[in-house]
Length: 418
Ligand SMILES: Nc1ncnc2c1ncn2[C@@H]1O[C@H](COP(=O)(O)OP(=O)(O)OP(=O)(O)O)[C@@H](O)[C@H]1O
Ligand SMILES: [Mg+2]
Image 1 (cartoon, rainbow, N blue to C red):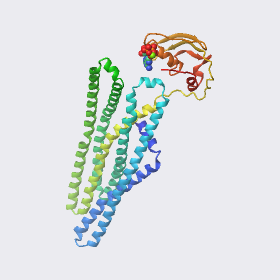
Image 2 (cartoon, rainbow, N blue to C red; image 1 turned 180 degrees about the vertical axis):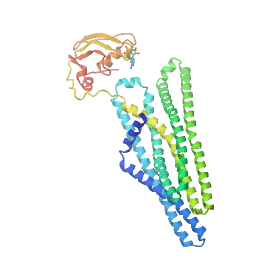
Image 3 (cartoon, rainbow, N blue to C red; image 1 turned 60 degrees about the horizontal axis):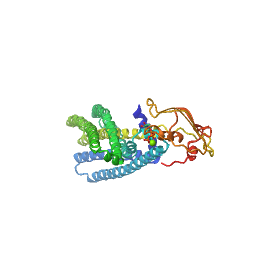
Image 4 (tube, helix red, strand yellow; image 1 turned 120 degrees about the horizontal axis):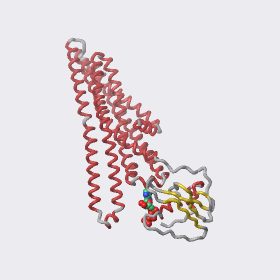
């Protein structure tokens, strides 16, 4: 369910570039059509030689058509990857833009509760991997599926009997690919998660190096890093190993299909019901038909990892924003009477911090707040500036509850020296 949601959102990003998307589909169709025609002319040429060994003018004509197909296939494939490159680069740029714009709208609570490294990893590394997967997936999916459909049509048209054998045997290969893909997804999710954790840890270790050295914590840091690194190795190994099973297993089934076609076709030729050129054509089709299954199953694993990355970026984009206060009035120039009225507040639900705190500071009064570390001095500033909202009671400026005015107008009234 969640994965479908991710797919739909990715498509919405892709469809922001409708011309490139339509062109990509069109070029995919053209390149597949040209590729599928190659064995047709090849078979015709063989039949031409087998039947009338000396009709060179006819043979030349067939070869010219063959040449045109090969050239068209090459050019359209190049144009297809051009379109796909454009789409994936644009999409990842948009995603990064949305994710970064989101950072400015997040409440301080999000920034405090999520490690910076993990957020950086979402915007940088995950976005990169997503774009790679999208590019590969898009190209091979499009050509793969059109090749499969085109070959089925041509096979049934050339010799429906053998065609049906091929079409019936292939679901086995799809089944195997799907089985492996569903079992690999969890490993890719795990891999991206641990990688985020590692980035976060490295970032923290680097930014806090001074503290680490001051408290002689280097060894412990290294131990912790090695532990995360080992977990990442295991997750990556699992993901790569299981996804690499797909190719050999589908290829095995495809080879069986190929052998079946060769056997039935050869018997048909021996019985005179099928030409040699026809069989050649068919063997190329059987080969061409199964190849996209291999590719698609390879691409599926790539797409899985891309989806896992996209989901992490969307998670960031979807994080609850600071509630909009556009409709509220601005706080007019305050004279400076600050009041706290029965304020309750805690960062974590069960860990009570400030309870029933009342305080009144009049305009012009100078007040120092003193307390041991962790007693809540900085927290008081967080509440006055409305980086966090109180759980109970209220904070008043000139008698106005600060929740009734816009945050920006409130913050403009303060001076703060860190
Ligand atoms: N973002 C946060 N999430 C959860 N707990 C927090 C968060 N920020 C602070 N705390 C906790 O709230 C308590 C009060 O912290 P606060 O930073 O207000 O203390 P302080 O009085 O400013 O201390 P110091 O003198 O060390 O600056 C501490 O126990 C601290 O661990
Ligand atoms: Mg403090």
